[in-house]
Image (cartoon, rainbow, N blue to C red; front, top):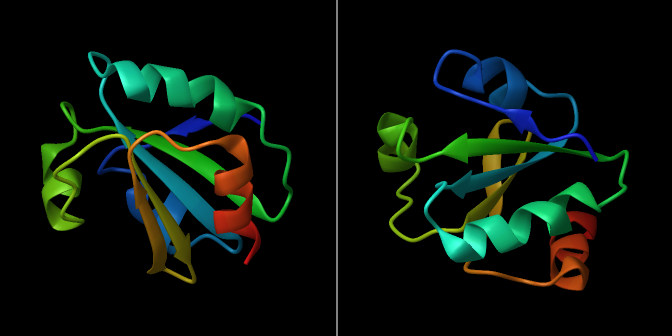
Length: 101
């Protein structure tokens, strides 16, 4: 799946106003588990969800707003609201379960 890089300028459009569920990956380039999670996210094929990536070093304001204190942090949004959150490296099965429910 194509992962869209998001920042404060396009967050509202890509996440909060999305017609589909959005899985937001809060990460950083220096974070080993974040780098391990990226190919897992890219391997997910689900047309009911959009996956976006936010680099917390570049987007501190968004990280603070959504209370991201540990990474990787996956936050699932639906209709502009957070509905689920997972912190740390998780498996593809766990991500698919998170998205599918």
